[in-house]
Image (cartoon, rainbow, N blue to C red; front, top):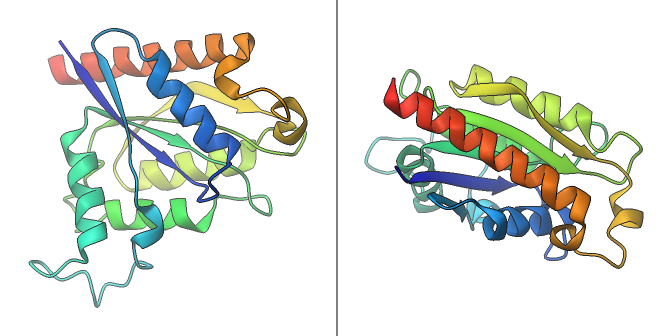
Length: 187
C-alpha cells in the first residue's frame, strides 16, 4: 500500500533549514511513501470566520484543506519564533480545523519535527504545534520527535539531508509515520 504524507513547513524563508529538512524528507522517503511538500502557506489569509463561507473559501485555504484531506498523514516542520509556533503554521492549523466537526485533520496521524537556532531545537514550538493540531482533530503521534538544536551552526555548510546523523533520524521519523498511517488506514 502506498502512503501519502503532506508536509507543511512553518518557515517562509527560501533558505530555511526547516524547508531543507522537509526537502530531505521528500528525498529519503521509503518505497511506497510519497511526501508532498505543500507550497502556498504564505498565500493563505489569516483565519477569519467571516471569509470561511461554504462555496466561497479563499482558494489558497481550499487548496490546503484539499491537500491534507487527500493525505494519509501529516508531517509538520516547525522552527521556533520567540519561543512558540510560527504564525504561518498556526494559521494553517486554524484553517484545517474548520469547518467545526469536519476538520481536514480528523484522525490523520501527524508528527512534528524541526530545527531552530536555540539550544533546544524548537521543542516549545513543536509542543505547541502538537497541541494545536491535536485540538484541531489530528491523531498526534507524541513519541515521534526530532528537535535539532543550533541550526545556524550545524547547517552552516551542510544541507540537513547531507548530515548522516540527521538523515538517519529523519528516515526513522518518516518510517514510523508511514507505519502509523498504514495502521490507521487498515483500521
